[in-house]
Image (cartoon, rainbow, N blue to C red; front, side):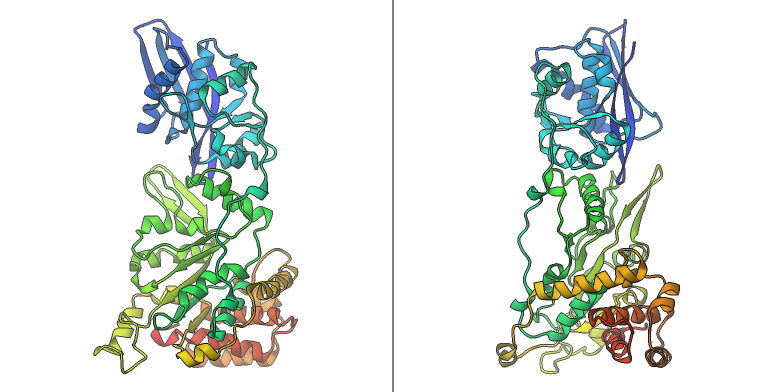
Length: 505
């Protein structure tokens, strides 16, 4: 007789069902595990043996075989401990086989039988709900898994609690999630606390309204990083669908617990020394990188030219397609990575190329070399490019505080609502197809003539041509204008040219 229970194998953001089969037979005492287990899964034998010993139980003096099906699917991670233990308990007769067969579980066991939190409980809960099985997860993962309302989730803290729940001796209550306990986070800076730099604030508003990518260049200490960190305060909260997409990626990344579910848009700001695997994802378990963790949110790259050129060029695929592909010999893992890229860069390595009194002796050549580390194809994907000029002390003290982020966010939400009405879905101008954009942008002939003349004069690429049109449409939406006028197009062209002096469009 074979005892079975279920768990999952994480393949990117997807949880594939795994059947855990346990059989014991006469023979020399042994505990074999098959089904492509990795080192962490194979070591479960000793953790389970010790955890059972803590319950005053021992493995029988028989030949025990544990199979993880399907056999050709690699099994990675310590979350297999709990389902293996449940299958063993059913085989030992301490648990009804029918109960074990209708249970899907995840959890890492300590030597004394406690359950530690694991990654991937949210996608596993989606699988459990689809297969109509009850789910057992560690106590810390309970609120995360219970966010899938269709799943019946129980969260024991120890193997003993799990056993008593499954046998009916001490049933545990079903866990219920509450969004009010979502991840706390320090509020970002408000735009009205940043004096001056009105052009940069206007560019942030346009970027937030249309989902555009933004590049800021300028000398150090002028507020580029502060402006970027204030950008999330202009964005609306996540929709329920976006919340689920974002939470699944956070869950498989190992950011377990209730905090994976949040209505706040992600804001990721990796250091410029981060590796390509850290930015794009990968490693032994093909975990998501910063571009996937920023899905439905913001990826901020400070000191953009300091990032490795290969890492920067790897961003081109997710910027265009909204997903990142991690190719491995045994699998191809896809993560959604639809984010807004906000980048900041000094004009040169010393940062003072525009100031003759402070620039180095290599100016302006040093500026061309430094910003030349950003490839032309990547630079071409920034819809908005602005220079953040230096402000004197007198200019800064005399500058008004400007509008609060909440006021600007209200305009952004209204502009996004107009885009949803135009495209028939929650689609932003930055992601509208070229054919639909030209057909439904509702641009005046004078505005299109202005764009055509500018494209010919400045040698805009086809991509650059359509990106200017998208930005102009966002400017018109902020102005609550159904028609795209020449003034909107002229402002959009102004944002296209700021960084164009450092490279071809």
